[in-house]
Length: 146
Image (cartoon, rainbow, N blue to C red; front, side, top):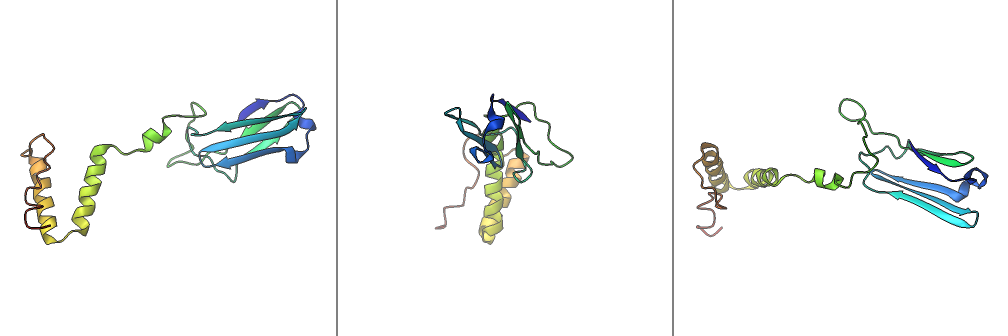
């Protein structure tokens, strides 16, 4: 839960306090509290939240934002901090995995010649026969007009 101290907030009408929940963010807006409006917006939460189960509780001098955790593979994720600016970086696949995925797609959608060339290249790579340069070993790929 996130505790937001705002003296006197409990006296406001409920329509003056609103919180929009998204999968990885929330946006709390308090309108016209003693002539001022307040906003607390947090993007890139450390983990995803359940939008439908998340809610706010308005007390006399504070707002409690209850973020409902999304259940992971084994249990609920442990949160060590509210936001994680590196969250998007973690979701990006590493370059080697991207190349492997590309090669796999090319193999599955390619013709027999393409499959043969990719299969030979992967076999050479596993044996360590390819150089360490950018040459992927696709030696015959563009030679016959492809």
